[in-house]
Length: 195
Image (cartoon, rainbow, N blue to C red; front, side):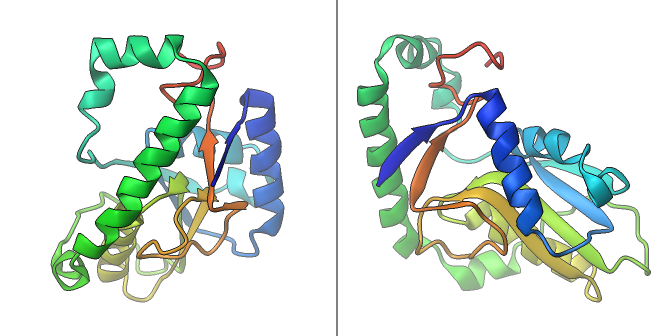
């Protein structure tokens, strides 16, 4: 598996590429925070996507607490990309191994309330995020939206589908089996975003 790094200009170009492949006009876009909000900000200026209502949703994942640790943040800034790339690959392998522990029946029963005003005319919902790893977050949000809006088509878009065996396959993506370091990533060394 390879790791690539996108600066802000590269990221915007990739959003344009992904935008060109989306043949689905949503009524609503649900962006998974924090990374999905960067994606949403970039989409807002493009064609039909600037007329869409955007909603943000935050899902705290296990293990995210460590990434807020001062020592961890410091190490992410001083280690060279070659080492950080290996750490990313290791983290991805661990995530892939964790797939066997995901109980889809239990996960399907979970409901995540998404505060979108009820609109019976809502036909198309697009969920966006920077990447799908195990797919657990995207699966949970998509299932919740499908339960909340049973008549709407719900599709997903990400820039990177990192683990092919993820529990959900994105409808739109640019990279497959590629780990992407985005400008807002904790281990990004540029000045595009404050972490």
